[in-house]
Structures are given as structure tokens and as C-alpha cells.
Image 1 (cartoon, rainbow, N blue to C red):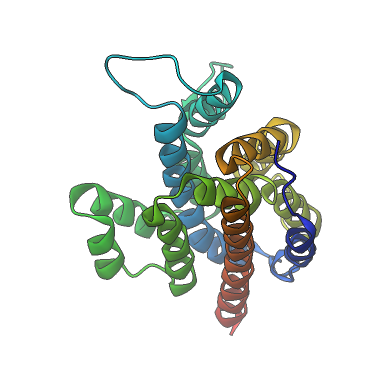
Image 2 (tube, helix red, strand yellow):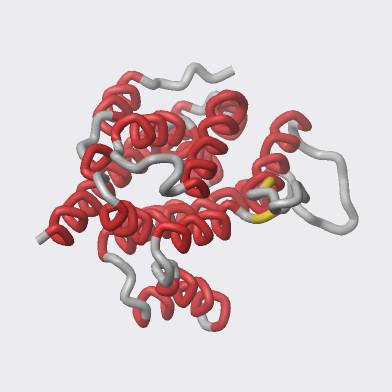
Amino acid sequence: MTTFPLENVKKLRKELATHPVYTAVTDMNDLTVFMQHHIYSVWDFMSLVKYLQNKIAPAQIPWTPVGDAQVQRFINDIVLEEETDEGIALEDGTPTYTSHFNLYLQAMEEVKVGSSQLAREFVSKVASDSLDIARKTTKIPSAAEEFMQTTFNFINGDKPHVIAAAFALGREHIIPEMFRALLDKMNISREEAGVFYYYLDRHIELDGDFHGPMSMRMLELLCEDDKVKIAEAEEAALLAIKARIKFWDGVLLAIESSKN
């Protein structure tokens, strides 16, 4: 099995975990600005997931038993949880199910009514027209647009090991650290933003306990002990984390600008 190089990745993860954006969220207006940027990385994550599912556990007829069953189970579990996870229970205790994207939209509306409208318009435009048209005709934050461009550059490159690296090391491994830092440092209480806290807690639980280790198994499987693929995957992982750091730089600037 591949021994994946992680030293350079670890250095960037440390920088990301201590980014000043987390302490910049001091009130509900700051949180609204943060969420109006972050929602787009919540959305584009699913395209990474769906690409990998199509490669590892494809829907094809007639079906044939191919691939690593453990990794197939992992990617199918990711889709199950991202598209139909447990939401906030109703007042009578009845369970609800929702995608993490829709859960985040719900969290945005709890913080500020109407704050999710632009993101909803963007996704609606993607569905009715195309991603390119949606990006050109919807005034989404520039930092979010640039981050999404990096994500879809990975996908358009159509190299499973590269996309798995962006997914595993650029998302699954760093999300628990980022969200713990945000919970520890932001000045927003659980009572003020209950749905947002639920979203963060859910990702820390899922990504930290199971998704992270299994995403590395998937990455190693797709690299096939090939030195070229390993090098390309490492480069993609570093690029993905750098893109997140730059994204947070843009969010921090937007929060500071909103105060003025």
C-alpha cells in the first residue's frame, strides 16, 4: 500500500487551523458574512463526492461486482450522509432528513432571514442553465467563486487520484480541525445559532471518526503505488489546502470590510 507523503500537507494544515478568520466571527453580522461565503464550498463538495462515487461505485446496467468493497461502501456512505443526513428533529421528536447543503441554508436563515437567497438563486441557475452561466450571472462573492474554480479545475482534469487527494486531504482531513477552531474561537453561542452548531458538530463527528481514515485508503487505492500519481496527488492536496487558506483570507477581508 502507498505511503503517502504528508509532511508538507501537515505544515499547511497547521496554518489553516490557526487562521485568524475564526476569531473574526464576533457577532451575528460576521457570521452571516462568513456563511454567505462558505455556503459555496458546502455546495461544490458534492461534485467531488459524486465524481468519486461515479468512478468507484458507478451506477451501470448490467451491474458487475468490481472494485474494493470497503472503499465502495465508504463513498456510498458519504453520499448517504451528505444528501440525506439526519436533520433537526421536529418539536414532537419526529426525525427529519436533509442534505448538508440544505441544512446549511437552514442555518443561514436562522442567523439572518433572507441571507441564503443568493446561494439559492445560484444553485437554481446551475440547474436550469449551467455552472458557467450561473457563475457569470450571479453575483456570488469573489473569494467563493475563485475557490469553486479550483474545485472544478480538479474535476475537469478527470484524474481520480487527483480528485481523491483534493477530497481526502483538502476536505475530509482538514474539516474537523477547521470546525473545532471555529467553535472554540468564534464569539457566537449555541443558543444564537443552533442549526449552525449542529452542522459543525455533525461534520466533526463524521469526518473525524471515520471519513478521514477511509478517505486515505481510497486515495492510496487510486494512486496504485504509482510514483507519478502519488506526486500528482500530493500536488493536488497542497493546492487544495492553499486554496482554502486563500478563501479564508477573502472571507476575513469581507468580514473586516462589513464592519466599516
